[in-house]
Length: 378
Ligand SMILES: [Zn+2]
Ligand SMILES: [Zn+2]
Image (cartoon, rainbow, N blue to C red; front, side):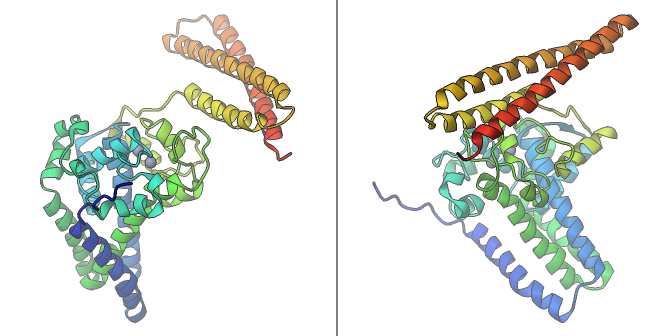
């Protein structure tokens, strides 16, 4: 192996992480100990954590990097300014890196924050040196974003927008509250460090810790605990396979406030064209992953062949029932939309749909029990 010269250190990035990290670790505890915190400081800090963190997840990530929905210009300006306040570079640069991450996930030479290079590298190490120097000027994978005036305005004036937002907002609220310095330390610096690291966890921990229900072709994981700290982005296994879906947690009970914000804004017309992956594809991916896992285990067992035949038969049955169900669902929806059916025809279609639905649900139960049984330790 040849020893390669390490890429040059990115001094500005290092200084930002070290200085803000030290202030949070040293000044914030001192401030709390000697002067105490008042509720205005606490509320401002928490509100800014949510506002700037969600501007990264709903704005930088789901709106711009993945185009999973469209947003009104006013929403875009707010997301661009609050996103700049999170100090993670411009939308254009961030989205470009992120599109490379999805395209070449886990490829140590191309993925900007490849999890295969370990926790430290994927969390923060990748920003400390100029790895893959071309990434800092080549935005050819974001030609669509270069047509977005808000994106280019933020990119061209990133430094003043970032500095003004980061200093003026906490200082102004601090001035109103009678303690500029305290607010700047807590709602300015401490808030920045928290949002940095929780969003960095999506590149590090969400590729290390959790389950892989949809695919194991990359390192991304689903993790409900992580979702709780990352504004819903912990469902990262789902996200890597269906990246254009505006949701990361697809079940109603999964904690995904970014999804709730996007869909909430759509009710008042501020966001539109919310993209969802068809349920059939999601269900099929999940079943295929279960098949793959159970199959790998059965192949190692002495009497595995017989069980494998049974497993395959049940899988084929499941897939055919799914196809039948989703096509019945579609015919029913089309008929309802067109409103052309006479009542008895509608009733018949609805009856058939319900019948297929319960057959599918039975087959799903059978399939999941079979997998559980085979996956149990011998
Ligand atoms: Zn990822
Ligand atoms: Zn993504």
